[in-house]
Amino acid sequence: MLRDNAGWLLAGLIAAAVLLSAGACGGDGEPTDKASGGFIAFRQATSTPTSPTQAAGGPVVSTRPCGSRDWIKVKGVVICVPMGATLHMLFVDPLAGSQYVGDIRFHVITRGDSEVRIGTESGEIAKWEVAPEDEEEFRRLILEPLEEAGY
Image (tube, rainbow, N blue to C red):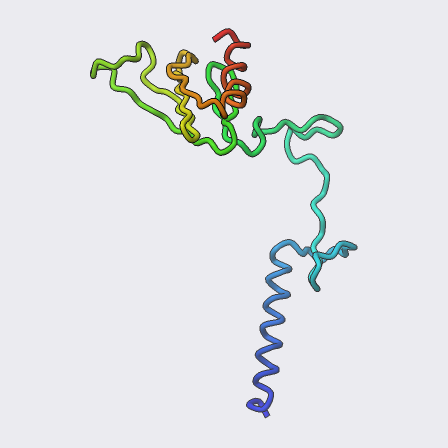
């Protein structure tokens, strides 16, 4: 008889494993009126504040000031990296007769033919080679915040 029902037994064990794993992932036995689109329902997250920045009725402080974009902070100024641009760090050997004076580390923002180098210590723009099609966005996101801060 066990051999005749082995398929059904296996299907039952798999179903039990799926239900048990769903319970371990967030089901806590509390009833819910929200369904996830399938046969398993999960309880919605509570709105109870979980950190000091989420005080009831107060604003939530974002840890990503530029949304989904990368960003850097130079001398207290937040600079948002333009969409599609890449960001990396450049280290310059000060003993190798570098053209740069003062800074030895630079944030480098590139996109297509555009490249901007910003000194990490001074906040000065060491290189501004921006293609005409990138000029408006690079100026708004990089140059204007630095100018407003006096750099």
